[in-house]
Length: 431
Image (tube, rainbow, N blue to C red):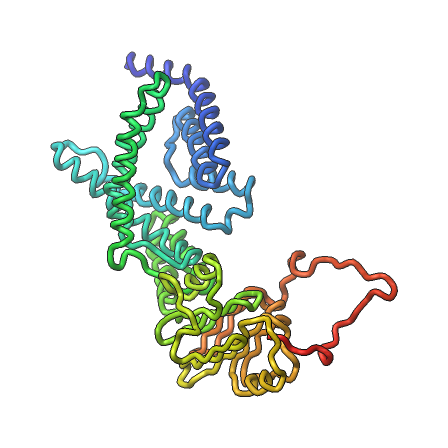
């Protein structure tokens, strides 16, 4: 008892120094890394752990996660809608809730056993925690990036110990030896360990079925999965099992959502059409970002094809026409692909035979397709458009009641005699 009291007095005497050093170290690290959401969360968590230890309270709880989230949202409230905030706090919330469960605490707690069984228990803990994190992050990753890795938990069994016990200590030792100019051999070991880590990442990424690509899921399906996950994490009684219901409904909804057949960017320049061979783009010279974005939203893992190369497409320098099967019938899509003049009679004839017309320019009023016309005037109000032909669903980026100030910026009034009105009747269409 005397020894314990002495330790307690020593601990309390050093608490202010520890808190001050912890505050300095965490703030310095946060500033050097650019004050991103994960580092802010780690900084707040470290300070709260020190305060909890000083007060004699349990530090690693869900209250710690909630306090960190509130601190981040007070500083960066817009980050709550971003993937960085959601992925970071979803991972730590899942880990905390998992290890707070009585059965998990009993299984992974201290046991009087040999080294082999202790090592096996540690590997099992790492594997189960990695699997749980993968499952918890999968809905968020699919919602924001339309992709999800499947083998990350197994790769982390090697990657986490390699990073923690090999890479980081070697880097610290190399920096220390650089003071005397003797860090070159250790930096070679750092490079070798990082090469091994990258080799593991590439092997896992290239494994069959390692990445699953899904189209953009409905926001309601994502909300159901988030509510179900939070319900399971917060409850500690059998009521937590009810969270599996919205989680399962949201997952089934997301998995059964059909990919869109037509994707149109907000400016109308780029169109992706789902053909028999895969997703094909209208313009051959689209940038990498445009191609990647359209492929991700279409649920395609890889580069999209070119529409002009498809057998069902008939493309010229100015126009492109293709037939798509969907909803028990064949749809004809007409899209413009150049800035050259098109004879008005040819354009109107092509519009009459098409079901959907897409153009980056304002189409004349006499261009009347059988179902949908997406020209510059329409896309200005809708933004990007995704069309699913099987259900006839048309999803738009912008809603009719959208009143964001950057949508309709204030305009300067022209002076007397300078105002010019746009006359559609006098406009000769240019494709």
